[in-house]
Length: 440
Image (cartoon, rainbow, N blue to C red; front, side, top):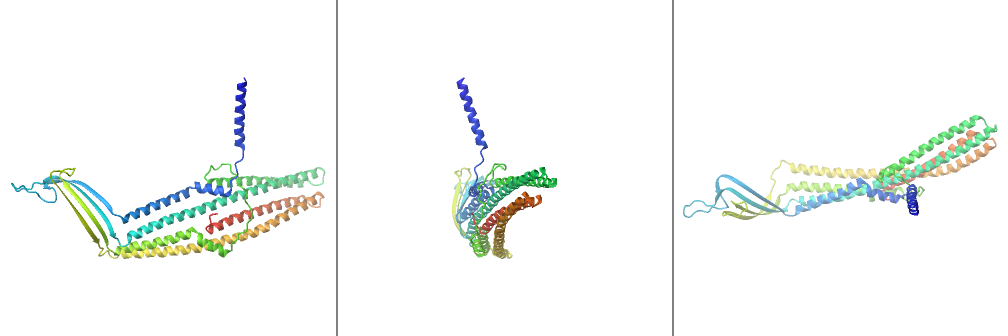
């Protein structure tokens, strides 16, 4: 009996602890933890990293063009009448007939070819693929910065939604308190029924706002979960870092940093260099190609090439190949390649101009958010004092219920404006830092 009782107590304790553990809220994630998680799990980044590997394989493939190529052939040929086996005829001294003949001829041939000169095309093609590796790495850096920005925006959006929810709860609480006061006044005949109805309507509207704030927070967390590649309904809590920190750099300093750090600019420069290598490859068509090759061949009437009759020989050859006329095809290719260089240079210029405009846009938005933040902070103090004064006046029936309800609404709006300006400041700051090429 005691044993059963002990087992029952153990199971009850175990499942109770499991239930308590399951009910515990998740540990709040820091911004840095969210960024690290997103970088580790993002599929677009994974694909870009695989692209770097692919570019490296292409570079290695281009490197092999510098070295000799070894090829081999083995075949059998059936003739309609006997043919000489080998590279010379063997005559019968008695009959004078050719002895080394057969209708089936097996042959093996192997060749080693080493390019000596290709007009610079091999070197230029290798450089082009090497630049391709650097391009892939710059694509990775660009995607990393985009991911960091997405996480920061999602993170601050959650904090903004949490603040809005807090304001909505405070508003419902204040309207509820005002409704109780109004009801008390109505019961003793101080205020009319209309004041009670107004307070009830305002409370109902505030509760609707609370429902919307709760839904907005739910959606904000779902969005960040999707960025982190977690289940969309996974419980999520974040550390509150919503605060004002002045941006220390001037616009000119921000532009300078952007032009130095943006991986897109480096990417554009690499594309220019690739286009120039394309010009060199096209110009190689004006020059001859020179190769050194060695060949060994063996023939016999047996598949094993060790029959009674066999022949073998080897050769070494240096070959120069010229294009004497192609109706201007090479020149046209060169012209097209030069056009691509110009296009790449124009793209880089447009990119730089776009980056400067992007920095200007976000910098100005940052200044606007900063000014709005200062105004909104003062508005909260004014709205709180306005509410206090109207509540006191209402107690003595100097102010109307509408005055108090309006004061509550004004305070709620002032708080919403403040948290909106604060979150907008942090989000715009994150976008500005992305425009400057920063990772943090």
